[in-house]
Length: 112
Image (cartoon, rainbow, N blue to C red; front, side, top):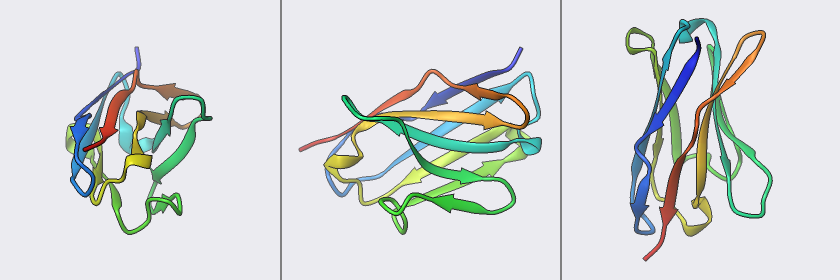
């Protein structure tokens, strides 16, 4: 059974940093495209960053966020620096090969 578990969210002040982790089980994440999405209240879920062999970022996070993967740990990370209040959202991890699998999400709140 495929499972994705996100962690690392929390409350941080503007300008601060957080690192999110997404650990997979029941599959080999190196064979999958891995992505981070986020959804703020009242807004649609949006792609933040993805990684296959290359990385891709939303314009709003370029230069501030970095996606990476540790295949030995079956884990994908999202390093988030220079956080802004508009980054506040629930962040979700997705794995996709033929089918898609989602984690349960982790809340990130950027506020002073």
